[in-house]
Every structure is written in C-alpha cells, then in structure tokens.
Length: 316
Image 1 (tube, rainbow, N blue to C red):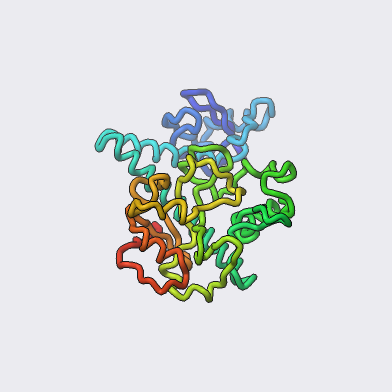
Image 2 (cartoon, rainbow, N blue to C red; image 1 turned 90 degrees about the horizontal axis):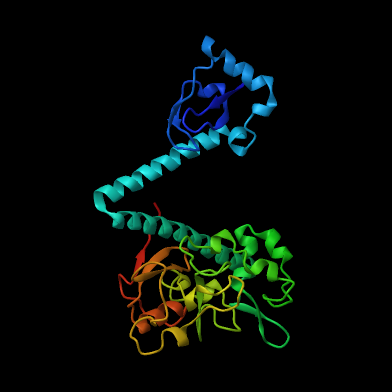
C-alpha cells in the first residue's frame, strides 16, 4: 500500500510505499532533510485514508510513480553535491575541476573501449577492418567507419534507417547528423550538436589508409602498440559523427613541429586518449615525436615504439 507524504518544507506530495516507513533522507525537490512517518502507527491513519480517498490529491508525476528511484537519486545527488562543496571549501575550485576531468576521462575511456571492441568485431565477421569511409560511383566519400560499425554498438535501428547509398549529409540522412550515439559523444563536447572527438588515423600504410582495408593479421608490428582510434578535438570540434573525415597524418603531424600539430587539441590538457588494436586505452603525450607517432599508426613498418610512450589508462 502507498501513502501520501507531503514535504514539510516545500509542500511536494509524493506517494511512498509502506516499506519506507520511518526512513530518513533528503526531499528530492528541495533537498532539505525529511523523515517518512511510521505508517503503521495510529497517527498514520489519516495519511492512509487520504492516499486512497481521492485520486485528485495524488502526485501523478514520475516522482509519485517511482518513489524508490527518485528518493535514491535524491540521496545520491545530495551526496555528490556535498562532496563537491567539501572539495571547494578544503582545496578550492581546482579540486572540482580535477574531479570533473577524472569523470570525463572515465566516460571517454569506456567509449574508446566499446569502439575498439566494435571495430574488432567487424573485422572478425568480415575478415578486415571497415574502410575509413565508403565511396559512391563517382569516388566521392559517402559514409564514415563510425556508421559502418553501428550494429556492433547496439545501434541496429539507427543503422538500418540510414541510406548508405546516399551521402551522409543527403536530405534522406540529415535527421541523424545531429543525433550522435552515446558512445560517440563526449562529456566535454562544447561544439555543435552531433559532433564527436573519436577519429582514426588516415595516411599511406595506416590501418585506415584511404581506399584500403586491412586484416588484423596484417598488423605485424603488434596489436599492443598499433593505434586504432584517438580522442581529439580537431577543427574547432565541428565534425559530425557521420562525416567521412578523420585525422590525416600528412596534414596534422608532418609539419615540422616535432610533435603533434598545434591544430590538434586533446579533450584534456597535455595529452590525447588513444586505443590500440588490442582494445587497451592509453594516454599519449602531445609532444610525442612525429617518427614515433608514425611507427604507431602503421601496422607493418617494423619500427619499435619507445617504452613509456603509451601510458595505459586503468579503468576504475
């Protein structure tokens, strides 16, 4: 049986199940401390009759229908808020920024793992990794690899609704250009709707060389040191997740800077996140020499990667 409880502070009415009788916590609306009455006591008879007498007094929102979920969410939110306030008081605003960076990196690490798993699943089924992009009869790019692996990311319905024989920005596909799948989204996305920071490396002899598609067996340099995908913030974060463009090694790195081009910005200061062919996520310093980057994006160059270049990200 459910009973009607009214917050004494803000007046929010919520239907509460008997099992929460006597519970204490925070009001999900105002956040102030509340105590649920003991519904089995004689004093609760009025609450019982009120809850059953007239439906017009019921709180019919999601809060009322799901008291347990909302009550728990309120406690979790309050706990997070208190933790952030304590961090600000003790360590200043920088502590909150550190917490947010850690949370953002954890989400992106999970995204990269799922993307790498999907790429390898595609390769397992087709014998080769997907091409960087598909092309039409005229040779013009149509769709990105990000579209081709949607079925391996649990996005079958979206994949089947996209017309692969028409360009990604054709009117028939435009409904999806600004609706980015969760796995391609990023907590720090400050760009246009539908953009993504997850890119592959283009260029001669790379895993995703334009017009080519390689097999995992072709990665003779080792799957633990060959890069598949990177989390970067290129081109002012304006690329649609469907757009068949990625990181071109010749344009972005081979410019004499010694490290990555100044145009490349990580989503976090000083480094970018990358995943290798074995699915492991790493941090890669922005000052990594061009020659080392080239060794990591070519699957069969025979070049060694200096120890410590790739710093594994440990999932927490």
